[in-house]
Image 1 (tube, one colour):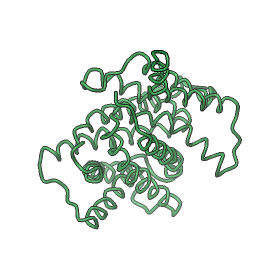
Image 2: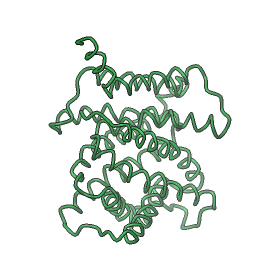
Image 3: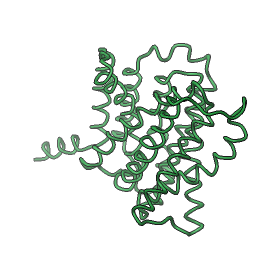
Image 4: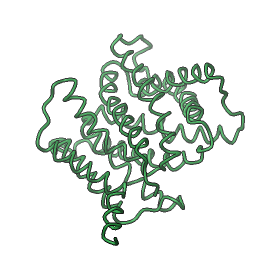
Length: 302
């Protein structure tokens, strides 16, 4: 498993703050439109923005059909399936509980990496670190989020399947390491939008077509630009330099980022449980990174 550089950690933290806002804006959009329309607007808007950016930068999408087939698989695993399942899940369960289930992504990723990769095998210390991080997420979000957990079983299963899909996407996305991250991000969301357009137009407007309010359009636009365009450029950069398992640590940081944003922007107070959870997550990240343990061993040897 690759050790992350300071720049990679900075990009990972930035990505967590960007994705931390996606749960909030998805809830706003769901007040007026269906989950299918939310996902369609997000990937469709992102595709248009990325195509424009590519043109302005003088870059072109590949014409190799094998690459496009890989883009379509990536779009399904990283956008269509998880976005739809998570947004649908949020109609039944809270965003806090959604973030807990989403934080299982690194656990699924390391299991998949053991069988599907040759250079991302991890030892017991890193598995322990991931488990510590997951406990930290639960503690930080609060055990109250688990109340009534049995009443919304299918929504919970949907978010867990989304976490597995994200893990598969992280492994699959390793094949794009020789392609510019912006080109890969564009190919992925263009493929996703081509899949979602007919589905959303046929099944996403059960009560007829209409134009949502400005607030909902802003929420979808925010998710398209920041949570998709900017986020996936960072995503493929981190994946190329640090690997799938390290990349999926972002799901531990997302709840932490959401709480910090609430404290800084909304004046919310941090509870003792949240502070304890944050400390556990930071400890987990230090364990997974491995440098602290390596330095300790070197001092012992010296």
